[in-house]
Amino acid sequence: MRLPKWEGVCKLLYFTRVDSLREQPLKLSRIHFGDLALLMKERLSTQRPSVSIHVKGEDVPLWVDAEQCQIVLENLTENAMRYAEKSIWMIAENEGSQTKIIVKNDGQSIPKQDMAAMFEPFRKGKKGQFGLGLAIVKRIVDHHGGRINVTNDEDGVAFVITLPMRKDRERALTHKRINRRVFCIMKISIKQIIIQTFFF
Image: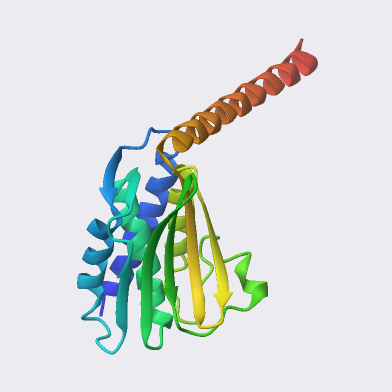
């Protein structure tokens, strides 16, 4: 009975850790989508045997931090498992200079007014647990220079992650790091101006 509470503590600790990892370089490696997706399928198939889990695009290569990408897929599939009626799909596909990862379930659609806040911490859906899973996913995807969206389809709800290919990702991550440094320098400069204005 205490397991859910402990799981919540673990998610909170990981959420804090993800924030601290933003300033550190990712441990990128080349893996195949199937390496993670088939693992998730095997792990989750016993939770609700009546729900079919489909994997497509097993051979699509991903240039990601494998540990963090596993956390992303784990959180999205666990979320899908709570809301699915009969089926869950995990899909990867290359689209131009981008790679898409889609986790979809055939459950009820999400009200549009709830979509904007879904990735904020401690925002829970009707069957949500701790309100941290999607927030963790968003931060990891951002850290990889990608983006995540949720859409209502005719036959369910899809979470779509878009990641740049390797070269584009390195360029995007470098740009993000430069922006952070500039912002930090600006904060320091503004602080110095205030100190000089009022104390000298």
